[in-house]
Image (cartoon, rainbow, N blue to C red):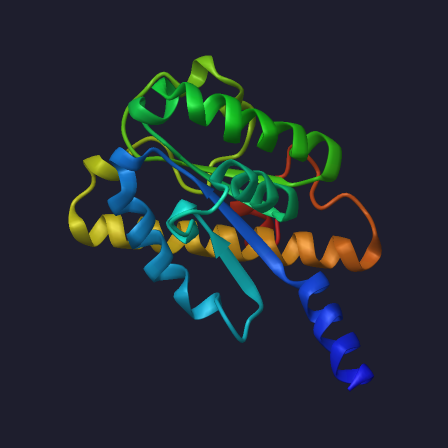
Length: 185
């Protein structure tokens, strides 16, 4: 019994956690990305959190804070609605940026729609895909390929974070490119 509890606690501590930050107007993109990430969930030890997990009657602000506080990686779905949301800025983006500085949370982002992201702190972070064409501008087959690349970037970041936790070091140098890192360059 004690061994089981210790093993269970150790698994939870090693769990890789992804926090997805998005505007509800962009919810369809969360569903597509979650679907692509589904093979990583469960046995692979990845926990994907977005506000769909909030139960009716829950203390939702506290749940969001808790999810941010335990995330290893954050994925921001950036669009005009995302940047326009004061709630996202105050309750998600700023705490995530602070967590990146203080705890080494890896910030990845996706350009869902053309917007003024270059005028924000988001531009300082490596995107999870090529931002030359936002997701909503791509034909279906190309969009699915881009979502696959996003899922691979998330998987890589989660692995980097997991490995650094084992070694108790910062997860990733700030200027590393995920594409270069995956390709061994």
